[in-house]
Amino acid sequence: MNETISVLTNHYSVRNYLPNPIEEEQLQTIIEAAQAAPTWGNGQQLSIVGVTDQKKKKQISEIIGQPWIDQAPVFLSFNVDFHRISQALEQNGQTFKASENVDTLLVGTTDVGIAMGYAIAAAESLGLGIVPIGAIRTKSDRIIDVLDLPSYVFPIVGLVIGHPAEENDLKPRLPLDSFYHKETYQHDHLSHIRAYEDKMKTYMQSRPIQKTWTETVARYYSHDKGIPQTTESLNKQGFHFKKK
Image 1 (spheres, one colour):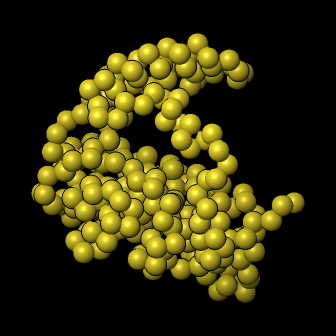
Image 2 (tube, helix red, strand yellow; image 1 turned 90 degrees about the horizontal axis):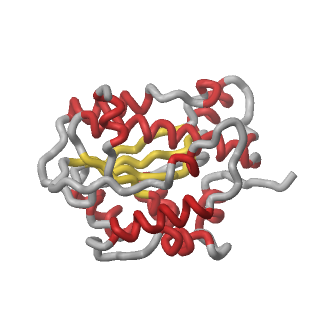
């Protein structure tokens, strides 16, 4: 197995960090790796806001309720960004009109996801630890204010980066046959889910929270509440999706 594949397949999230700072050169490398990721039509429909200021990290940590944001030296917000494109159109005598098309958000979030994957791989290849922060969407209105995000920019996910204080075990994944489908989609996942639940029960025995995978996903998907303020925050940022 080559070194790149080894880094990718040995990923684990880190929620306990040493106080050591990250070298500026390392952070620059991570950002450059993220920027090198492919984007739809080379539109580069994303941006990253990096936060290293201790007071601001603490503020974000308290807003979201995740202490490792304050503990680690770097927090990155990965954002859908059409503000830059709107300015490009404006200087060309045109108007940005795609803010009412839900495909616009899909394009931007896809770009964000790919770029974050590159950033994670780069950070872990440097021996650093990371943990994605999806919860920034739950407080998107306040994150928008703290980071001073302009119109057509929306925070999708955060990334904490630092020096791990400890090593973690690799979390089991679903069986590969439930993840990778050859030629056509295989509809029945029940046997894979049962096998995975058994594996996760063993893994979770030494953890303080011992929920099964099904119990975990049920917290998010067994109701239609979602995150109530997301639509309001998207509207505030200029995104008004219409049914067509």
